[in-house]
Amino acid sequence: MTTDIKAALRALHIETPSWAYGNSGTRFKVFAQRGVPRDPYEKLADAAQVHAHTGAAPTVALHIPWDKVADYGDLAAHARDLGVGIGAINSNVFQDDDYMLGSVTNPDPAVRRKALDHLLECVDIMDATGSGTLKLWFSDGTNYPGQDDIRARQDRLAEALSAVYDRLGADQRFLLEYKLFEPAFYTTDVPDWGTAYAHCLRLGPKAQVVVDTGHHAPGVNIEFIVAFLLREGKLGGFDFNSRFYADDDLMVGAADPFQLFRIMYEVARGGGLEAGVAFMLDQCHNIEPKIPGQIRSVMNVQEATAKALLVDRDALAAAQAGGDVLGANAVLMDAYNTDVRPLLAEMREEAGLAPDPMAAYAKSGYFEKIAAERVGGTQAGWGA
Ligand code: PSV
Ligand code: MN
Ligand code: MN
Image (cartoon, rainbow, N blue to C red):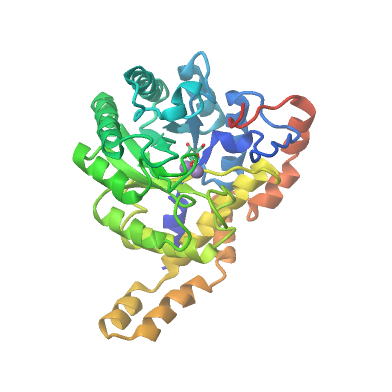
């Protein structure tokens, strides 16, 4: 049993986002930290540190144009030299003045064309970097009742998604991300999993839904959504983060480790650890150091997954079949309440890693080196 769990944990890969390594903040203030990367090449170097110490973060998501470079093949080669690969390509159709009234759902066909061209350019970047995943998040929506036609905007969205879908190669897919609100405050064009699911279902197997854990109304049962999408073959991946209020982008597992456990239990239960589900972080480290913030987040996902894998499924099934409500609940809680840190430390040592990645990074001297070398690090992207 422990051997199986360790094997499953070794196979668990968590993708870190390039934007987590840059300076970030809220709309009130972006705090500059020491040693922050000055370009995408340095972001990859920092991401490689997370992988070096955890052994669990072998790919890095890019955000275009925040990570715009002259030669994407060269960037991918740089990643390979550092021991990591390029993960999902995140499109950005939310930071141009033209998109004030929307991108692919904008009433102006010229703006829609511009947005679509960017999405297609992102597929070109996938080709150049070897990435198999395009992540689509649209900030599109309206602020006032009557501002635009809700149904027409769905038609425009469907048209753009279909054009992107047709451009995808055989080994490529897109993940459509939903978000309840923000920056739109009245309607959002992809506000929930149902909307994303319906668009993806119509398009085919290369379109799947991505669940950003911070993009729901308070109290939403995310593990139910996960179980449902996985059952339908439409769970493409996660943007992991924690929220206390809205889209807080705090470290995954920080606000509600029990929720993360429940989500990972449904992932494991539904075969999602073997099914190509992308486990990505989408976080900002506004006040904590960034590389340790990512390392801690990777560890939090590993811990929740280890607990999920510890659930005695036979005992659970027996209790469920027997209508033993308290017994079934106890099986789940026993797993959740197990301290899995020794198991993970053992797994790391068996893989030639330090048992405590946080301590190993702190001791490595990497931070002192980048703090001395790098002057004038970049902002993650927002407000840049
Ligand atoms: C939007 O809130 C989001 O979660 C999307 O995934 C974006 O790509 C990411 O944040 C960065 O802005
Ligand atoms: Mn996200
Ligand atoms: Mn978000």
